[in-house]
Image (cartoon, rainbow, N blue to C red):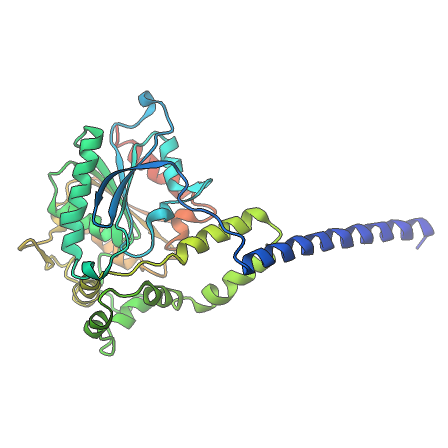
Amino acid sequence: MTTASAAVDTEQLARQLFEEMERLGKSSETFARLASRRLSVQIGQTPRTTIWALNKMRLYHYHPQTLPEQRKPVPLLLVFALINRPEIFDLCPGNSFVEYMLRQGYEVYLLDWGRPGLEDAEFDFEDYALNFLPRAVRALQRHTGKREFSLLGWCIGATLCTIYAAMRPNDGLRNLVLLTAPLDFANKGAGPFNRWLNTEYYNVDELVRQYGNVPGEIIDYGSKMLKPVENFVTNYLKLWDNLDNQAIVESWLAMNTWVTDLVDFPGAAFRQWVVEFFRENKLIEGRLMMEGRPVDMGQIRASVLNVIADKDHIVPNCQSTTAMDRFGTRDKLLLEMKGGHIGLMVGSGASKRTWPQIDAWLARRSG
């Protein structure tokens, strides 16, 4: 090796060492701020206005981001599950389904179920799907001055929207979008939840009696135990490896903020979820009774887009796909997308894959 080349190598090594020390410095500073909780992000930042309230529930209208003549005539109402916060629809700027749909010209509304107290422990699926949801719909219709609307439900929110669509087919619902919808629980071996909740040792009555509302911490721990290594180890290792990347850290913080903001599951609804849905599979079989009559999915007249995730470990695909034959409408489509139960809508590829597909389908039916 010549003296000149040795000098070049020394300079390169020095530069690499400096860069690595700088990276470690940034990582250490970020870690210290995370550990001391001095680093946080705000989720749900898209401007919105409350237009209706009942008990803890709120209906939000997001401020339009397009000119009036560019907006779709049919408004869109978003409904999430009874657990976790609905801000997952509006996680952060650049990773917000709400923000994306506003830019496509939709009038976007969001129903927030709120945080149930012990006084709400007797609320069940009939209350949420056929009492509270219809009131929110009427508030939306008053606000828009239009009768027709689209409804998008995610997870248990999709189950509630399905019940509403079946029982209120003449209320103006034009389009029904279901995301990872748990509807058919016939396969008792599909997914850990089915196996856990169907065991004789899972005493749901005692659980509800003890707590009133099932604590969000119990639901969260059960969900994380479906993939314990990924949730308790890998998730944090990925963060550790990217502490010097501000964009990745902020994205991780946004998701962690949402995941750890836990909501209790109303007691009566939880018991019904375990017994009448998971164990007895009453909905898909047409035996689920509400308002004194069976919930018949064959009565659904709205166009249906049923979206499933190929790596969904929370809601196995068989809980959604078999429902296609039950929907009464002729205009229905099953769409399988890449991703998991949550990543389907907030993963790195959601804005390029899932959101445009939902928009393309809905736009043709919102004119």
